[in-house]
Image (cartoon, rainbow, N blue to C red):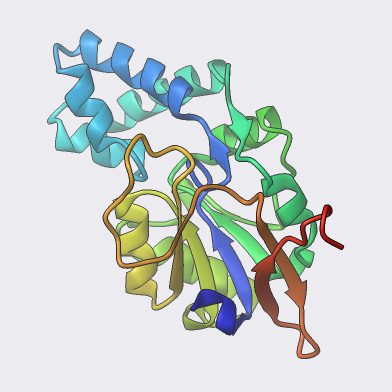
Amino acid sequence: MLMQRSYAAFLFDMDGALIDSIASAVRVWTRWAERHGLDPAAVVETMHGVRAVETIRRWGVPDVEREAAELTRAEIDDVDGVVAIAGVERFLRALPPDRWAIVTSAPRALAAKRLAAAGLVPPAVLVTAEDVARGKPAPDGFLAAAERLGVAAEDCLVWEDAPAGIASAEASGASVMVVGATHAHPMATRHPVIADYEDLAVTVNGAGRLVLGLQADPSHP
C-alpha cells in the first residue's frame, strides 16, 4: 500500500532504522545496569527507541541528567560494530536533500558519532534528544522535523523500528514503515515491514514527491 502513494518527505529514526548500533548500546546499558544493581536484560528491554532520561527515570535512578550525560559519553566512546543497515546508503543518496530528516532519541553528539561510524552523512534536518521537551512516544520530534522541512507530518512516511517510535509516528499522523533489520524476532505490527533497503528504490515524480518502488534486478534488464 505504501508504494501506491507519494510522500512529501521521509522521516527516519536512526538506531535500528538507518544504523545497527545494538551491540554498542547493549554493552553500555549493561554496564550501567550492573553498576546500579539492576537486571541488565530487563533494562536493555526498556531502552530501545526512547531518550536515556526516560529509561533512567523508569528505573528510579536519581540524578537523571548526570546519569544520562555519563551514559552518552560512554556510548560516544563505544561505537565498535556500529554499521549502516544494508542498502541504506544507496537509498539515502537517491533522496533530495530537502526531502528527508532524521528524528532520533539520541543526543546530538552521539548521533553524529554513530552516523560517522556507519559512514552516513547526516541530513540538513536532524532532530535529536535536545530538540524536544517530550521524547518518543510523544510525536514532538516527527512534528518538528516535518515543520523544518516545510511539510505536513500527515504527508510523510516515517521509518521506525521500535514500539515507542512507531507510537510517536502514529501520533504525528504520518504513515509508517517498520525496519526489521535489528529485530531478533518478527515484530507484531499492523504496518508494513522491511528487512533492509536492498530491494527498495525511490524516485521523485513530476510533482516533486517521493515514490517508493523496487530495485530493478540487474540480472533481468
